[in-house]
Length: 209
Image (cartoon, rainbow, N blue to C red; front, side, top):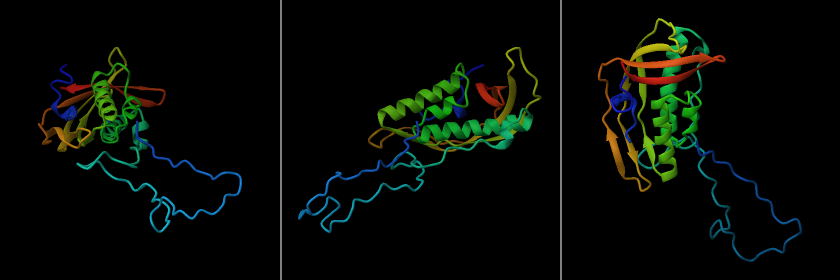
């Protein structure tokens, strides 16, 4: 099964979410003399503005910020065809989140350690995060999911599906586009192998059918 090289719609255009917290600052314990100097907040002495905590999607201006992680649907916790399908969509949503938020670890949380495509995405997200770049997209939509839920000797279930992919870009630290894709749907079946253990699904491999 061809993997990263042939899987056009499963590979990114080449992501740890940066959780912004404000550390509380307290003044000295002793009383201080009033200062005649204006505060650093500006000529009027106003305090510096707090960082913008609004959710901001990834764009050409920068990576996503303050965007909630995808929530695992209740259906995706079930060892059923519907659960397998819901997990497959969730896996792709998680990869998008990891790439756009420079958060490689979320990809690991839904993947087995020997999943080659999963590890490739993890590496892409990590490289982007450490290099100061970011992704905008891709986003995927799973359609036409099929599985008879039988297991192979490795206890893996096989699912087949079609995949719609959005346009996407990868940016360097200066905001220049390194790579871009138009997206689309090649109408060719894709495959996912996954294992259900300890009450959850984990992706073990993905590729072209």
